[in-house]
Amino acid sequence: MRLYDLIQQNKNLRFIDTVSGKSSMVTEFHKSIAIENSQGLGFVYSDNQIDSIEVFLNFLESNFTISLLNAQLNIQFKQSLEDIYQPYYIYDASRTEIKGYKKCSVSESITLFKRKTKQENPINKDIKLLLSTSGTTGNPKFVKLSDNNLVKNAMSILDYMPIKSDDVVPLNIPITYVYGLSIFTTNCIKANTIVCTNKDILQKDFWEDFKTYKFSTLSGVPYAYEMLNRIGFFKKEHEFLQYMTQAGGKLSKKLISVIIAYSKKHKIPFYTQYGQTEAAGRIAFLHPNDLLNRKYSIGKPIKGGRFELKEDTNELIYYGENVFGGYAQGLDDLASFNTSNKLFTGDIAKKDEDGYYYIVGRIKRIIKLFGTRINLDEVELILKNNLVGETFICTGIEDKYLSIVHLNKKLTDDSIKKILREKLNLHSSSIMIKCIDKIPLTANGKIDYQKTRELTII
Amino acid sequence: MNTTEQLYKVIAKALDISTEIITDQLEYQSIVEWDSMSHLILVEALETAYNIEIETEDILEMSTVAKLKDVLKKKNIEMI
Image 1 (tube, rainbow over the protein chains, first blue to last red):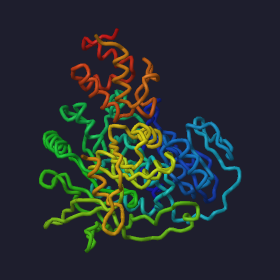
Image 2 (cartoon, rainbow over the protein chains, first blue to last red):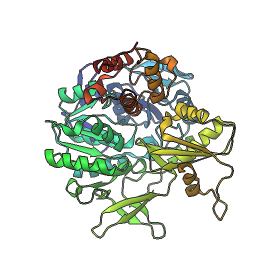
Image 3 (cartoon, each protein chain N blue to C red):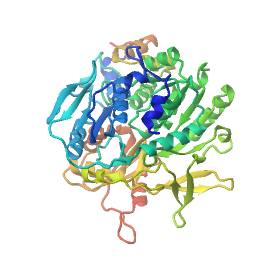
Image 4 (cartoon, rainbow over the protein chains, first blue to last red):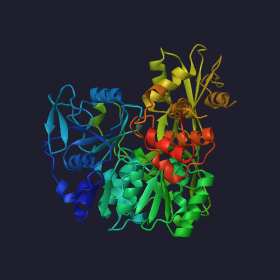
């Protein structure tokens, strides 16, 4: 069965718009938007509000391939993605016109942009969804996912997540981010109410909705849990809360102790999960019963998946039907979908004697700042392109800081920070910059990232 | 003596913005720079600058610069 049919099968499912307080049954969204009965690509710039959800569901039903993108993406990034992929449809509530597109009002509040000339490039029918590998850099690299990938992953999650048919679930994580998407798909299949909102946990309105709609669950990346802790969430009892989930990186030791204590005291199971966009969502989870004794473990693979450690590097390899069908860097890449069950995660792991896995390092050049995946090579390129071809070397310091090393003494820290602020919305307090004389190289002449990183710490 | 000018400097540094765009009406999440992350940096910066503790309700209450001033006022920090 297709993801869309599984969602429609949940007849009691309703969506609440927190702005108007109105609710809509899932059946009301069935073919509620006129989309041509053909194949092609649709860009959906989503902000988790009810209109985005309605558009997304309609595209899921259609034969179109969907690219789910963050509505807050920088406008230049949006335009360059559209130039590269030439989508037939665009949903973007923030724009009133797009060159080369005509406006179609498809419902009272929703407007789609339709391309004036139809793109003839073939799209492989197995590609249902394209997700960005990075939510913010505007990199055109997309992860190609099939409907089967999404369904298989949702089913594996439903096997362990205690979702009940009367649950009320807020979309407090963007659905353009694979973790948010998996919360969306699984709860659409099994829960009762999805609360569509773009309010965050530092807004009073969010907590008013929390009480009004009686949220059954909350989810977050480590940084969101830091915020919850800061605002005293774990000091209070929350009557309607049933369980909590976390993904997107490691929790700090201090925070995990707070959560364990809270979870025990109030009998709120806490699910910590490991996942990747390339696996359509989740890959492993730690059962709440194991939280106390294996708090730093990512647990065991989800149902239907298995792990292997690469012999020479200990890279974690995942096998499962949720593994993606390759990357796309441009239109031509949409012609193929390579079904593969094998995913090189880019993370280095170890396994204990009881079969629990632990992430101990990373092979890929990515860091996570405040839960957002940042590709260091992309940051280097963005800086280079915006600062007249200077050389920059970026490394990460424990997912807390982005370290930047360069060679130009005339370059001010502020000019670098300004670009990162504009392009990637990175706060200057998370950036460390150092100007050096010579780039450290390894014995075989490659950049020595380890040494470079150490240079900024001193 | 606490001045609005000082306060705006604290806000500007925490949010990574220029003091020129700060007004009473400036709202949380209305500019990309004032997001959840910088909001907590702002809370910390205010705590340090005025030697106060800001509680949960007040963190959520400070959704505009004007409301932020109200929170400070409650703590006997008035701007001249």
